[in-house]
Amino acid sequence: MISLVGKVAIVTGGSRGIGAACARLLASAGAKVAIGYRSRDEEAQRLATEITSLGGSVLLQRGSLDTLAANEGLVQATREQFGQVDIFVGNAGVWPPNPLAIEALPADRWRHTMATNVDGMYFGAQAVIPHLPAGGRMIFISSTAGQRGEAGHADYAASKGAMISFVKSLAVELGPRDITVNSIAPGWVDTEAVTIPFADEGRTRIEANIPLRRVASPDDIAGPVLFLASPLARHVTGEILNVNGGSVLCG
Ligand SMILES: NC(=O)c1ccc[n+]([C@@H]2O[C@H](COP(=O)([O-])OP(=O)(O)OC[C@H]3O[C@@H](n4cnc5c(N)ncnc54)[C@H](OP(=O)(O)O)[C@@H]3O)[C@@H](O)[C@H]2O)c1
Image (cartoon, rainbow, N blue to C red; front, side, top):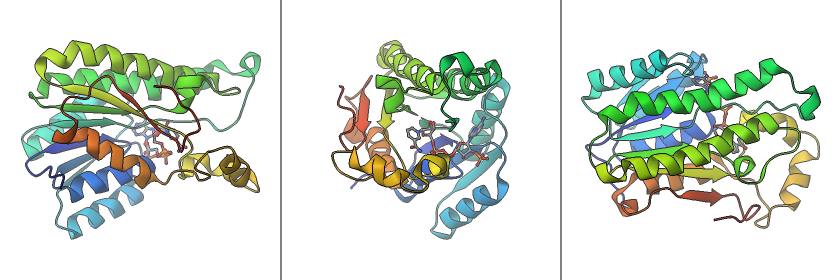
């Protein structure tokens, strides 16, 4: 039912995990997709082959997206190849898995988390907004950590809390241009990023605390992203959509 034929989407961190699921689903709905990723060429190439073999159009752009220049490069490459940008999915992010009390949290980890999650979001928005048309869509992947905090991960929680406020700010700024800005706030999602906490009995313990008793798959996040990218969500903006199996209920 949802068709994105004629639309062009950028997905940052789209080579694997949640971003790859978003890229796949947006492409299957008919969007041309530009994927930004940091360094893992093999995964990115495998996904691009999969999308093109299903008749989709895809562009890959390698490079760390924590500077304005890198984000402008991604937007420019997208416009050169596909002529426009309609949808921006700000997904690239890191979750340093080692829990550390704030007194022990080193400044280089703090700066790395902020550079990837916060600078990346800010520069991505600056790069793409001048090119978004009326009807444009921005969707950022935040986290339950940004809603309720995360002990041992104050850097990550602060970065995602910043994202939630950023989304609400931009929703008001860009509303008059008919551009919506929303966020999906996932709980635990089954990707490589969370291999360590899922090891041993970790996953079972985590699932026991989720009302729906399962962690999300990347596809569980991609579906709501597709909805927010679609005309069905044209009157939804500034929303932080809980996609967490019921583990954190704020709204
Ligand atoms: N997994 C969860 O439980 C969970 C829960 C809530 C929110 N989230 C959020 O969802 C997003 C995706 O998470 P994920 O679990 O799918 O992560 P993932 O499996 O680790 O994948 C991360 C993706 O981001 C890219 N990336 C990382 N740093 C980058 C940078 N500086 N510049 C450009 N690309 C970069 C990676 O590229 P390479 O492949 O080249 O490294 C990869 O494509 C993140 O923002 C994360 O915070 C995840």
